[in-house]
Length: 422
Image (cartoon, rainbow, N blue to C red; front, side, top):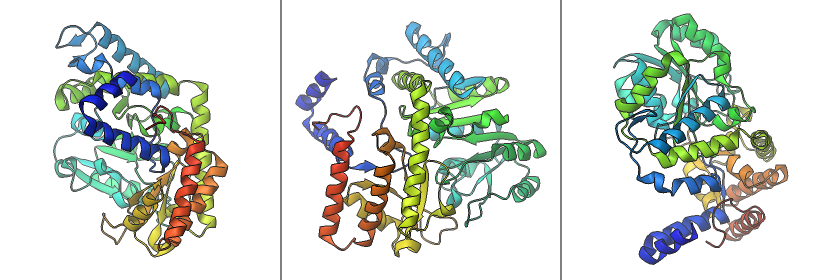
């Protein structure tokens, strides 16, 4: 790997300097965006290999190109590990990312104009769950359910009522900014009541489900479960579809040839590596620590007077209403914290009156900090730093002090797999 870095530095110093700059940024700051994490060093090794050279259109034993002896073994291994980890009847490991992953499911079972019942975006749903600006939002009819903005609870009687009115073909649960777990049994009940497929997008909590820290929708009889393979799972940037055996052919043909061409075999190698890691006992400890750290960070923010969407968290993330807490929109809060080495993302809150690029909140989580080895004491310190930074945002010396505190914290907890000399 060091030889490759030397080659890059010698032959394209501009790109090398940008890479080195990003490595320095990651070492000197703390990633608190809940969808970001640090992958395993072994996954980096899988990425930059000869597997990147190979086209493997099709599936193991049914390829359109020759020379597939080892790619077939590799993909079968990833599938076997995914099925074991999530207790799934079938797994497709070819989706290139989360968006095509979900698109492949919709296109496998629906025709244009069919209805999907999904979570409202401002209440926590994802772009691929029916945002009007997305292609899927234009092809299919998305009807949205909401949460109680005070406590985050979902009124399942109301969701059932909506389902009976709109008659969806898919009942979809899953989220990108909802700081609670899902009651999968209730969603399954609603899907059964209207004859719909039950689908869960667990992209954010896939690793926590794999680590037995959060519930698995497959245990409640869900038909399809999708998850990205990075975030809490710590694998490469990609997607994965888990389903019942009876849906195998529809899912596989929807991914290829329906939506994608050849899979990225170097990425599938990285997925296989991450899945093996997640099958080990230490990964369960990691998943539990992510949740413990999130609870501690949320408690610390509440103690400092922050207003949290749903009043707290029961997963790995939380959403701070910065307008209510500090009189500052999320875009400005993100900018202030970024300058101090605390990376978060601006975030809409339920029924947000603010525009998407200047929303009322910020979203933060604990997977990446936990990967670095930080624990409850560090979460309490981070809560103080976050609030101090935003409240004293006009004080240059105060911001410099927070920045130095963050750097000192980072020196104690280096990023795994990223060169420290960057």
